Every structure is written in structure tokens, then in C-alpha cells.
Length: 449
Image 1 (cartoon, rainbow, N blue to C red):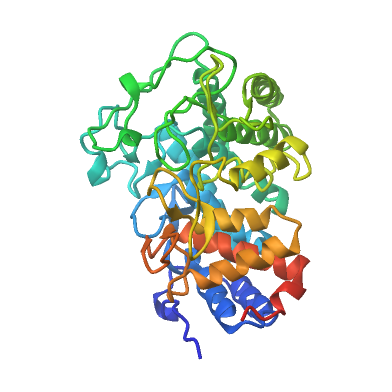
Image 2: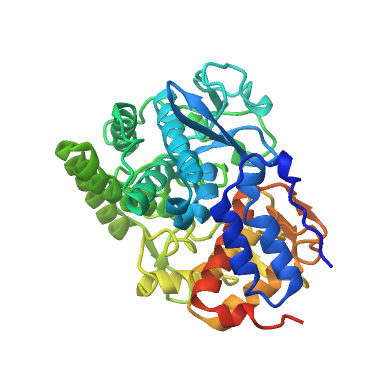
């Protein structure tokens, strides 16, 4: 009999009755006891362990840490709440968490649109210990200052999807509107049409992925693509124009335009966001594709605009594999399908096969390390029962007896893993199981032995 690995009720950071009912509903559909146990541990992990709900300036405020790092990443915190979005109308308390995080994000963006991670106290100058000597303009409240396009995209995505799901306009005050305008301005600034902009970052490290050339990266031709110093993995870009990040920007700028018109009554912002989205999309189509040695045309992972392209994929989302999941491209879009097949193969240098599993990793942890996140994304993006069943079976077999997902595990030995407390991937696993329960319950009714 599997015993729950959740914290005792009195020690949970936040409890949602709607989430607890969902755990009971979905668990009842799962025949495999170990899979049900893992789902029960993972799905509520963000609420159990990472949410700090309070008030700021008379409004809800939610600080959501990543897990084992006591800081809020714009990307991670947005993704961590995503699995509960379909339940938010059933639970006013859960709405408070969403509203609080949307408001917190706006304050973070206004503090520094170039930062990826923030401290609980936005007046603090403490920073994270590994960021204290970074050569960049560290501002109060910033935990780490790695400029990543996707960080601001996730801010827009969380806000848009919460509004669409609930119709609640409460978080979208003047503070949020100012943050939204700053996001658009920052994206335009990082198109670098008139210069590199104000952002600089260098770090002394034995890992080249922790710093950038001359503080801004390698030279680029200005094509309309938005430049990024770092990837969603927090690793430095090889070429500053990251294609998954740019496509995510296209999607979220269009979502901002819809919100700006309907909620902010700001047609000028809506028009500016729409025009920028169209410009970036055209640049991706003109400069973001490449031909593999076997003749297949695919989306590049990064480019410099001079015709140099990098083909790889990283497990962190946005990734090439994750573009359909993020609604950046339709799941039946031929170019994406070809690209997704290529990144899940030896054409991708960060794809690994071992005795325990196969999957995508990335430079952040290194060679031979598979990320459960990529296995989950493949299943979330698939309409193939065999792929989804294989993914569930593999995830069940590689959690090393902990009942939780991890950052990465060794392709030959899942007992060798990184980050035993990583809330984003736990929630993503829960999201997958809920999706299978709703769309393909027969897969959960099957035995995996």
C-alpha cells in the first residue's frame, strides 16, 4: 500500500477543496496503484509547498517559489498554477491565488522587466547567493537577472488565460496595464533595431552557458526577431534569437491585444501588440527555419539572422517540442510535426536513449540526462495512444520510488536524479494525467505491469 508523501494537512501552504475533489475524481479512474499514488503526490505539490498567499496594498498577493529555491521565477510560477486553471471557477480561494500572482507579476515586471527571478521582498537587495557578483544592473527585489523572452510571455499567458477562464477583471488595474505596456516596449527594445538596448549580463563561471559574450551575445543581423540572452533553461543562448521564445511572444502578444481591447479599453496597446506579433511572426518564417542534412525542413532552435542556425531542443518550455502545447502552432501544422519528430531523435544532440528511458535533456544538467518534462510534453502534444501510454509507463518507472517527478535523471539509472523538489514538473505531470482522464480514460484503466 502506498502512503501519501504530501505534507500533513496542517503544514500545507494552501488547500483547495476543488483540487482535492479533482484528485479523488481522477485517482478513481487509475487502475495502477503506483501511478495513482504519484499523481496524488504531484498534482497538488505547488499548492502544498510553494504558495505564500497574503496581501499587498489592499489586494491579494501570491508569492510562488519554484520548490527548492526560495525565489519566484516568472516562468515557473505561471506554469505551476496552470494545472489548476480548469478548477478556478469552483474555488474562490484558488481565484485569490491566481489574482495574487497576476498582481505580483505586474509588480515584478515594473521592478525590472529584464529579470527572470524575484525575491519575496521587492525592496530587498539580497539577491540569490550565486548572483551576487554578476556584472549587471541588479535592482531591488531581483533574485537573478537573466533576460529571457519567455519570462514576460508567461506573465501575459497567465493573465490572459485566467481572464478567459473566469471573466474576472479585478487584477487588471493601472499597475497591470503599465506592466503590460512595459513588456511590449521591452520586446521592441530587444529587437535591437537601433542598438543592443540597456541590458548587459556577465558572470564568472566555469560553465560557458552561465554568461554572455561581451554582455549581450554574438553579433546578429536585425531581422525583427526578439533577442534573448538566455533560454528557458536559464542557459545562455548560442545565437540570441531563440525561435520557440519568439513564437511564444507572437502568441502571447495576440492574447494581450484581446485583453487590452476587452478589459483595459486600450486600443492603442492592442494595435501595438498586434503589429509587433505580425512583425515577429514574419521574421520567424523568413529566418527561423532550416534544412537538416537528411533534407527535412524544420524550425531552428536559434539563429543569428545571418543564416547561421542551431538545431537542437531543450526540455525546458518553450521548446520546439512544446510549441503545440503552448498554442504557438497547431498540433497538425506540418512544419511543427516534422520538427517534433526530429527533436525526438538523434538529429537532436540533446536526445538520449538509455536502459531506463529515452528523451530530451539539455546543457543545463548535461549529457545523458533525460528530463521528465520533455516526456510529459511529448504526451501532452500527442494524439497517439501508444505514445501517451508509453509516456505514463516511463514516468511511473523513473521517479526512483519518490512519488515525485524530478528535473533530470540518468538515462541508465533513474536513481541518479537532480532536484527532488521541483514543483513545475510535478504539476505538469498532474496536468497530463488529468488530460488523459478527460480524453482517454481507457489508458488509465489499463495495467502497466
